[in-house]
Image (cartoon, rainbow, N blue to C red):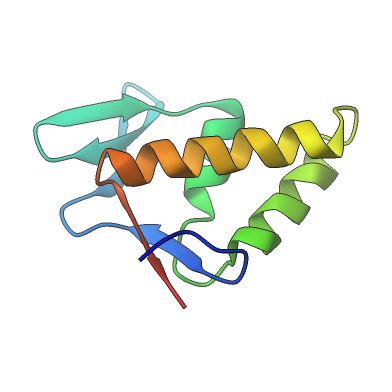
Length: 92
């Protein structure tokens, strides 16, 4: 499924959040991605409950000093990257 504003991202099968030496990680088959700052904020909301629009709105509030359009672009780009890496699925 493609990403749309009302789609709900969730971690793909085989992917999960973890921790290593007090560092949050996105654990994927045969690899891991260190999460901090915005990446952690985004991935922690990929629970199948938040829509893409909700994630964008929440992060625009957290990062209110940044331009809202830039925050939106960064989030969409990061979600697309995670989908390309097969770490996320999108549901309606």
